[in-house]
Length: 82
Image 1 (cartoon, rainbow, N blue to C red):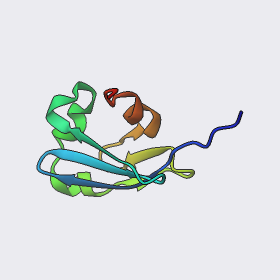
Image 2: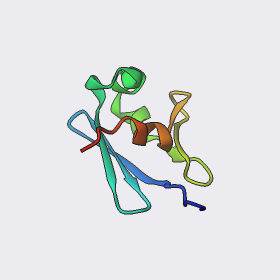
Image 3: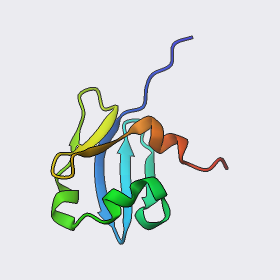
Image 4: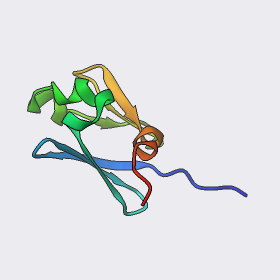
C-alpha cells in the first residue's frame, strides 16, 4: 500500500503558538514555550520567525535567518493521540 505524505502549506504565529497548515486541511498548533525542542524558535524575535520557507516537496519548514527548520513528520509525531 502506498500512502501520500502530508506536506506543509503555510506557517503563522499567534500568541506564542506556531500554527502549521497542512495540505490535507489539518492545522497543527504547538505552544512554543511548552515544546522543548522548539526553544530556538521560541527565543526568536518576530522578524526572523516570519521569514520562513517551505522546503521543496513540502516535507519541512526552514527559517533561513535562524539557520534551522522542522520536518513535518516531527510535528506530526509530537501531536497527542486522542
